[in-house]
Length: 332
View (cartoon, rainbow, N blue to C red):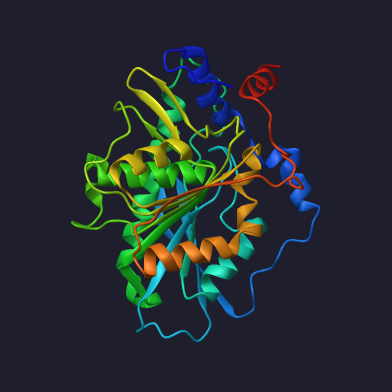
């Protein structure tokens, strides 16, 4: 489907198709749950904490560390945000266990956070009422910044190197992470709550995009290296971009395009013909590529620019539902 920057209907169908998708009610999710999911490995410690209370919501986080690890040795930290269209989802869902196990086994402290679900209970989202979607993203980003501050304040307890705090997220979680890092690099006022000089060290996104109401996609400061998995046929979160006037929803391919033009480091992993299932599947099947990215871009600090387009004839898309279908179902 071709996206025209001046087509208001197409812009909002995409933007609110994301908002209306209740990810955990899809056949795709059920297909995954019909298979045995990995457990959190026995060599990991899991500790849970409340990092903030907002609007009567107690926002928690889970910290995964290797048993017996020396907290005096500083380790990189990966903050993860789950997917669920700002409507549902859980930070400790079993579909993320393999990803968490692999990161912790490779000496990362993993912190999986909850955030406020700004579209839960919202019924009147349309192209004429864009405020709920924008508010949901803003709320999640603000919660991420508070979680980051909590992690920095307690870094000594868990042996976290605060100069190497990375972000990762799935679907709405990926939108949260990408938008947060974008706002930090562009010195948005909301980011002032973070410590002076602090920047996220890297980002791994599964079917994410940046939501911006400030015109074209550009950075005041060089952004963090990004690994972006995305299906090229994703009808929920755009692989490329949707733009109308100063409003933009910039997917992985467009972020890669801007990064290529400006010589920013990135790795785009495009899955040809695949849909929104790419928001989860790489955490099950692409662990080697993820670990290689972390070693190359974060440990070795290489500034590679890589565009990889994968076509697997044996891999069939599971989530190609269009935004218009979602809107019809919601209105029935």
